[in-house]
Image (cartoon, rainbow, N blue to C red):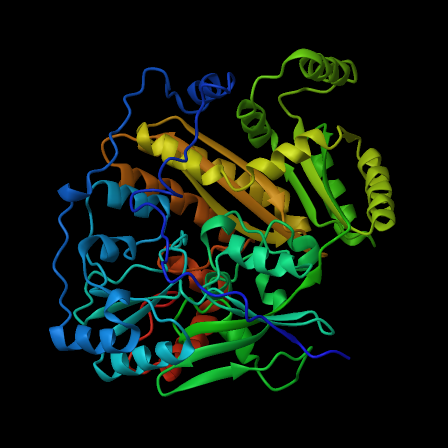
Amino acid sequence: MTEPTRRTDAVHTGAVKHMKWWGWGVDGVGFRHEDKPGFAPFVQKAIGLDLWAAERTEQSDFSQLKVEPSTAPEEFVTALSGIVGAGYTAVDDLSRVVHTYGKSLRDLVRIRTGEIARTPDVVVYPADEAEVRRVVDTAVEADAVIIPFGGGSNIAGSLEPHPDESRVVVSLDLGRLDRVLEIDADSGLARIQAGALGPGLEAQLNRDGWTMGHFPDSFTHSTLGGWVATRSSGMQSDKYGDIADIVKGLRVVRAGGVLVIRAVPSASTGPSVREMVVGSEGRLGVITEVTAQVHRLPEKRAIYAYFFKNLDHGLAAMQEIAESDVSPSVTRISDAHETGFSLATSKESKGIQKKVQAGLMAYLRRRGWNLDEMCLSFIGFEGGAAHAKRQKSLVDRMVRRHQGIGVGKGPGALYDQKKFDTPYIRDFLLDRGAAGDVSETAGPWSKLRGIHAAVYEAADRAYEKIGHKGWTMSHLSHSYHSGACLYFTFAFAFGDDPLGEYDTVKRAIQQAFVDAGGTISHHHGVGLEHAPWLAEDISTQGVAIMSGLLDAADPGRNFNPRKIVV
């Protein structure tokens, strides 16, 4: 047995970096279509938008925003500064706006049009848990509202202050709590501060030969605490589990004390408090530390691409894989619409690659495939070289049984390179007056095909209602023995009422989820965005129990009130 390794070399930099206030990611990084010859024709066909003729919106000018002044009393701000330092207390307009919204399409439309009903009054950046405790106690004593903030990537409305909130609102930014504190090599457990962003967290673990294996789409700009608070799922969840599986221990600052969940393999101590915290979106307190299950870096990691004749064949293959003894890290299949989108966002093939691609398409046509129904799949394998090879061999057999064909690692490598870039396409479309957003659900294998069809039908009716041509596409991911996640993307060109039109489409899709037997969200959380459907998802009694928990745990409604349940 060995003592846990305590990390004394990793220290936070002090400065906390944020995404740009008006969009995703950092300035200078964005999506370009000029080197993707299929993209503009695809968009024209899908939503009727001519990218070459579309007028591009100028980047928003922050000086033109109307930001209401902070309502925080000077003595309150001074008290907070005395805890975290004057350099880590902010009441300026930019800091407060950055901490107002997440990055949903609704958030971005509002921020770009200057619709800011309520900002936090003060932003604080504590350096450690002790400072978090003092900030929380000071804020609760003053009957202020505390909203924990990680990377700001949330798309479910979990961050914004309620517009009617009359109390002082404190945005508690965990960005300085970004260290891997300790690694227990015997148990594969790592104590990690909750403000650690994905890349920094993995870099610290990788230095000692470990990985958490949790890679959500937002990985580059989201934090461990945010993953826990919204019950996140990563692209490799088939192997490593969702964040609820990864989290073994927690420290949560509450008024007057710290909730401590020890990292034990399992326990029968009544309803799981750990489970209550996972997905609580800041309503039970401020997560400061997570003890996470980590794994040795795999000897081999590869993602292979496959084509299936149509979605029915692909879903059947994914189900067989999920029910078998094999354990891929990724099992993902795009429907025909998303497959077309993926091919349209690829750079132009040249030389031998172009000839190989043309030959493959000709071969599939000779086999009687309708290429408009073809579905692209990515399946990943990790572990020892022999293990990964054996796993792939078993999967290949199952793929062949469902008339699929393997096309090698080339497309898989491209998927790996592009997997965190999709949100930039949303900004690109917004710049040109179009919506591109996502909603995801999960359901049993027996209902997935019905959910898929119901969402398409509901979205088409919504597009007709708003009078705009729309596009819907989806993929299956995050497979379980009993079912999987279906992740939908929808797009249309805006008319005169962007948010009204967006609501019409979004609501239609969410209602289709519950009507067809799916959940209202698989991994984006509830927040404000999905709260209207909560009772249909977990029943009115479920909402009553959840409300009772939140009201009893936070009678003053100081912790991120009105999220999940009003």
